[in-house]
Length: 238
Image 1 (cartoon, rainbow, N blue to C red):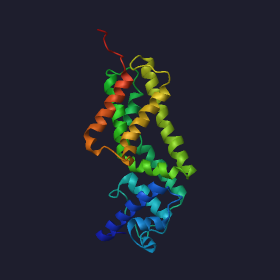
Image 2: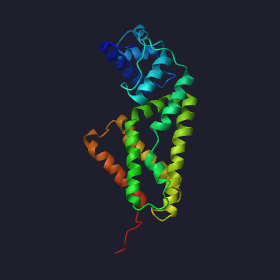
Image 3: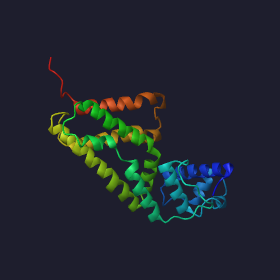
Image 4: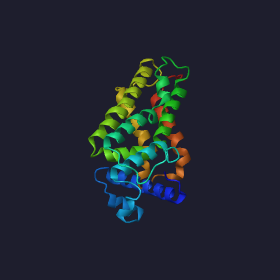
């Protein structure tokens, strides 16, 4: 087990470098030589820490999901993990990590006392979730481009399931006259998801991520989406 602080620090640097390379190139196209170059070491050095790319990718996924402080102690070189093992780990952990309790609870209520507060809670917690796991989501999106099983896991199961729940929630609130009716609740749900995804995840890869407005991003995005969903419902005409 790794106990030496210097070796552990180097392992953290390796995982960070590998995460950047996998996110940049995807899993299939990334090479150990690319990761060695990113870290600034000879390719052979990597094999002191991991047995190969499969082992390194599994370690990256575990650290992205749990954080280095919560990953069980490892023995070097980290043993190779089959791709099926990594996918199974992702499936298990994503169910917990990408769950949105505020939406689950909202779906249990037919007529909330304060739908605007409910909307702020659902949209705001979704923003926080996306921001917290943005590196993992970017990594999965990159790897899903040439890894069909990864794409099916993330897009067909988790994202589609979340969109279905959000669509159902919006449809119910529209039918109850609590939010502004629109022609298609699924389009409304997708608009919420893509707006939050850009601001919480993808803007960091933009040429101008607007870091100087960091404190204003979340409240502004949440306020605008809630206002758009609520529309004029509940307002008293002058």
